[in-house]
Length: 489
Image (cartoon, rainbow, N blue to C red; front, side):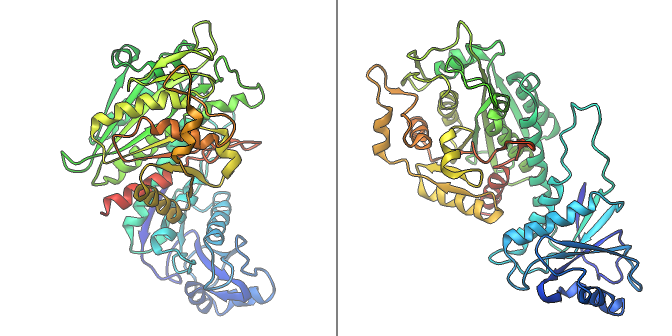
């Protein structure tokens, strides 16, 4: 689906469908008023009969209006005029695309930028229209014999002169889709080697992206004993995937994104319960968000440098798998007592974080489906955020708040480090039941002292369980908003 910025008058615009806003108490948006006058008050007549009431998320499709060039008019409710909330606006756009994708229209024009949304600017409104509309057309049917019906709608025009915001929304939507597609693949298809191939594909697709893949021998030579301890139980070899996007100046410090890439997590010897273990293919959503963000940044040609580092492995039970009580040595030289083999994400991330220092990054952000405790604390609404630098934390919080992909900061005070003490090694890999998300971040913080760092725990936001289970593509919107903000200086 293509998105374009366009300027036009609603009554003379030739289109398969024009989308206009309706507010409570039969209040029309300015474009709706123009159309109502053109068709001699036909819209007002329908409203007086009670056909629509302006309720947020409710829509009414009209056809055959005289003196209107468009074939169809779609009225969408946006709540009380001047008081539309971000949630109501999103509900309205969702209702629009739900109707359009089921109909015969091949193109549509959105006159929704004129809706005033509380605490949101035009950039937000434009990007929401693009991102929500694009996401609604996503299907998961590549492994089904019967494919999803083909959607007629292939072009949406947004009535605005701000083509840059449209491009930002489209690139972010493409990045989200890419992340979702990778995350939804089954573990027998999406292996560490497959993820490495995707990095090489991005290298071929964009001149600004280069890739490098480190195999287990290279990682062993670097002393990555923590990462390699996780892959010992799997027949799939681990990979350390490095992608560099060069959009800024040659020697400009990059933004580093480090994504956990567990393509399947059985828990290892500390085996997970059987129910819902199939969903552990999503334990690489941190990695997929890095892929999505780099793809979107390259598409937008952001004037910054980015390095993506993805430690990728499976975590499987085997005669050679790590056992509770084993002690491993990380690339940093710090030793780790493994008390629970299901706390493996931090074991692959810590070596990747140490490795990332070689790029002299301006900041490092790791993204991981790290702890079930984060789901208990924040549910599926907010990503857990922890950082060793408050300025970076504030930037990420603001980016998430702006785009709607929100995070919530948790502390990593020194007192929590006490829970990681081990009588046999420099640290243990779990800190007990209390503050599990925080102690996981405290573990990672021991490997990030050389640079400015933030940790995003996306265990609750990256995936939806249940009958409609699947990846959400989060936090690609948050990451893209952050990168766009950095690009704007």
